[in-house]
Image 1 (cartoon, rainbow, N blue to C red):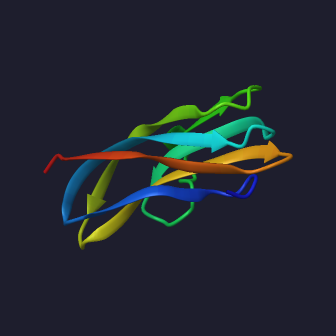
Image 2 (image 1 turned 60 degrees about the horizontal axis):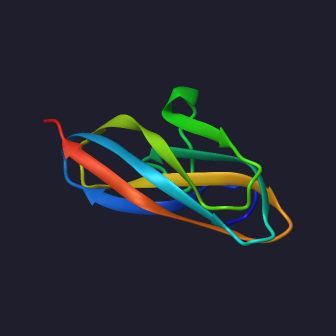
Length: 109
């Protein structure tokens, strides 16, 4: 990860329909990394948070330990097969940090 830059932590390709998508981002800093805040969200645009603040979540920490942040559920209407991303971002210093996660989805219609 690069500080203050959104990154795809996970993705899934979904077929046409209306989907409810949510997930959990796991942030894993190196032992010397100092993280001040982190974000998670669902998006249909690669490495980009939705502009609506209600479609992402923000957290803070002072400990250099792994943190898990739940991305809020998002209803995603899809007309053609589309990749949906679990996006994470954080503000950190000193060393490195990675992200991973689980993306969940349920076809509503």
